[in-house]
Length: 496
Picture 1 (cartoon, rainbow, N blue to C red):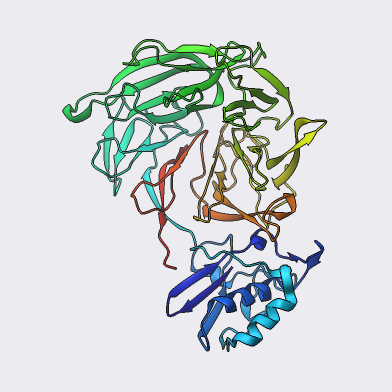
Picture 2 (cartoon, rainbow, N blue to C red; picture 1 turned 180 degrees about the vertical axis):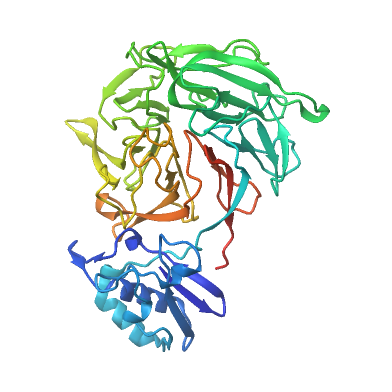
């Protein structure tokens, strides 16, 4: 990343090589030592004649003001070395048009034009340090125009999240144990224009929805949606295309979805089976929804394959396409990572171990198949740009920096099974976003680069969290909850 301080303030120049410390040349070979120069030349294209420019490096993974001493430009530049090892700390670029364009022409496609996007920073707000839940939600609960945060039995009123309001009777839990809230969704169930809160109390147990009392105020009424919801990553999405969201899960070993049977949502929801009995249990890991075959209909995914939604929704079972995506994943997402027009799969590999990958969709003998590409390695000893952590038990795929590409937000589930129950259980409770960038080709596997950015090191994730714009400033915000409490991370607007 290059930052420029000039008449128009500070710019971050992010490029396709942000996930790598070496830039490939036109033949795909690694060219050491030219990464920063290429970005410098692109910078020259953006500045006016004789503009004074100060260039400093910013570490992609180190928080705080100390980041200005970071360096990821070449093998010759260690992390503790200042930017001056490559260039003087201050100098003038005489941006003479002829010289500038002649140099760029010589380099050709090796230094493709880079997108200019604002830097990403977050403001951390601790809602509470009490362990109430392993999940979180967001939405404008009181319809005052400000987004609110939901963590456990309370909703916290925006924009400052200082006022706490009860949804259901609170119960505090010890971090060595477990809560009674493993998933939190926010949706208007009964169509009264007030957002309700849906809670999965435990994998394999009930999902209740709590009815927003609305303008009249008072207690939230609790209604049973479904009594036995298996899997640790249920979803609430519109899978039928009717504009109403359904709960995606499996029960009794059968994968499917459930939704209200009457307009009030009070009656027990009806389960629609989509698979044969797969003998899946309550603590199954890995579940997702997305259109994999491009027919416009969302399909269902689990760690062992995907189920194709038929043209007639009632037709069962849906056709299963076996493929091993993960050992025990979390939320699984479908997104066109490489820009080639089809849906790829993003998932963690072991919710209580290590690994994060994207699976490139290909055609093999005319059928959909996948090739795995590691983002975070599946073994503790290997890293991505110095980053590794265990227990990526929840993840979201969303555009964090506003460049039009969806990135990954995930982190470490802190003390999932207590202080000794998992690998590196006591490691820092980190929250990261992994920036997706594409290279000169713009399309294809070789164009894809992921770069990790630390958001926080003392919060982490639970079994589910949520992203969105809480305060209407156009920046992505994050709400998380786990055994360290509840947190809001507000995206801080950065001037171009």
